[in-house]
Image (cartoon, rainbow, N blue to C red; front, side, top):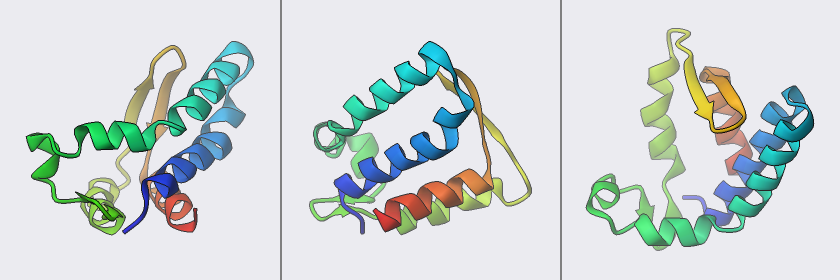
Length: 112
């Protein structure tokens, strides 16, 4: 289990170290500001949706936190054969997400 604060900190570190260095100008500033502000609202956002039937059926969010290991073990096989997924970040552009990114994000959250 990890706390919601760990998730916010880990995602912020991932964005700061893996995405922002590849951006310039207003895109870099915009994503930096967005991440900084959004990370402060992770707890409220999760609290708002954790009891929604589509989320609660996953059994990964409890009052104690998020079962990150369960999520990681479910997501990792999707990238085992070198698969890459394009993620569209509004007003920023496309970002290629692969197994290395999954592992880094997991590590940053666990270490937070």
